[in-house]
Image (cartoon, rainbow, N blue to C red):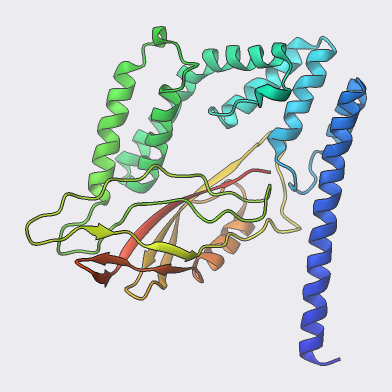
Length: 313
C-alpha cells in the first residue's frame, strides 16, 4: 500500500470515527429526552451520571437542563437549585428555552439569576480590572463588555444598585480600547469579530462586541477591518479530557495579519483553562487562517485581530 493510499485510508477512519461519535452522542441525548418524556426521572439521572467524563460531543448545558428538570420533578428542589447555580455561574447570560422548559424550572432560573448576577458582575469586573492593571487590554476589553451585558440583563433589578459599577466598566472599557488603538504611524488595529462557526456542538466562537474605529485625523483615512476568508477552529481532540461541572471554556487570541492577509503571528492572550492540548491545536490552526487584508486609504495594511474562543462541551 503506497503512502497516498495509506493517507486516504487514515482520513476515512478518522472521519468515520468522528461521525460514529457524534451519532452516539445524539443517540444519548435522544435517550435522555425519551426517558424524561416517559417520566423516568431516576433513569435520566442515572444516564447523565454515566455520560459524565465522556467526550463533549453534546453541549453540556443541554444535559444539565434535563438534570434540573428531573430533580425538580422528583421534588429534589435543593439539588436542582445547586445545578442551576452552577449553570448560571458558568454562563450568566444563559436562559433555557421557554418553549420546552417547565414553568417551575423557568421561574427557578430567573430567581437564581436575580440572586446571583449582581455578585457575578462585581466579581467579573474585578477580574477585568486586574487584567487592565496588568496592561492586558484585549482581555480586559472582552471581559468588561461581558460585565456590561450582565449588568444590562433584564433579570437584574434596578434595586441591585449597579449603576456605579456600569459607569466604571464603561470608563475602563473605553480606556482599554484606546490602549489597543495604535497611533497613526503604527500598525492599525481593526475591529475584533467572531470566528466562522465550526461543527455544531464542538467548538464555537463567542461574538465580541465591535470596537469603534479610531477617529481619523486629517492625514489618516478610515480603516476597513480584515475580513475572514478561512478561520476554521479545530475539533476537540478525541483524547481531550472534560472536567465535570465546567460548562464552557474560553480563550482569547491576538492575530497579527500582514498586508497580504496572511497570519504573521498568533498569541494566546488567555489560554483555555486546563486544556494545553487544545491550546496547541488552536494556535496551529490560527497560523493557517487567511483574511482579506485591512485597508487604509484603499491600500492593504497590517492589522491586529482579537478573538474570543468559547468551547461548549
